[in-house]
Image 1: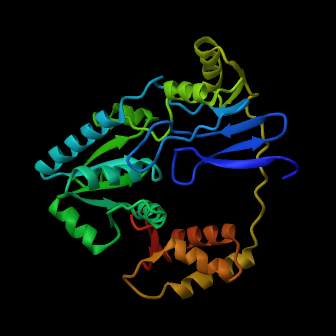
Image 2: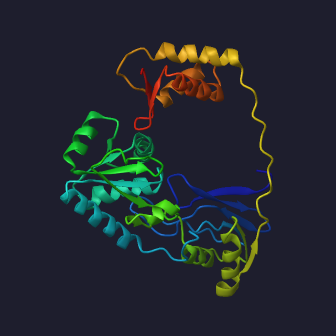
Image 3: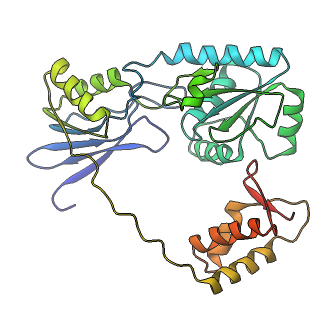
Length: 321
């Protein structure tokens, strides 16, 4: 395009993540945001595209320059999980829905015979991975099969980090992340695992790219990475300017007539008692009917507040109260 060639390379971060190489007659520039420069059970390390200029995000965990080895962390997770099952408790791992969640499913598929139960949100992402050749064996938590398996306490459960399972007394929770919150740090069960490169891996990645100049960005770690590049590798490291201040967009007033129409349309869809209607499907149907997403979201929220509908965070669906 416009006399330059743009080529995509695998970034090794999550399924579909890429880095872009911009090739011109004078030089080639690689833009890489989130990269992972080590193999995992479900992905290969980021491809190396030799370049003159590298634009690199300093996305390494600020808590540590070097992460523990994946092998030691996954071994500890499996050990903890089997101990929970032995105590007839339900081992529940709270993590980010994309990336680590899928790796955890593969860990249990590979090293245990446990059934893996996942939150519906994670199940939808798992399906995308499966559709693209990453085979994962799991059960959606919204199914009767999942409830039966959980009742026997012979499974591993994977949930998003924001999901609250304190209401389930038999659940024992551990957090799997490289950026724990203060509450997660206070937990005795914290496993540090990341789908992004740590500082040492980023330095190795830059070294193999053989870039003459590296521009780093992301507040906090950007300056640290640039300094390490200069001191350790003798590469010209420069920080890009901090994020520009962006004015908050003015929230437009919603059309009350359209909102009322959307509420009426949704209630017309949800008529069967004791049946859960997935939010994703309701939104898709309403969009096909001509309603905008913002209108649909507000209509669903209002129906819940009016007690016309009940929303379940477990199934991410709606039903009649």
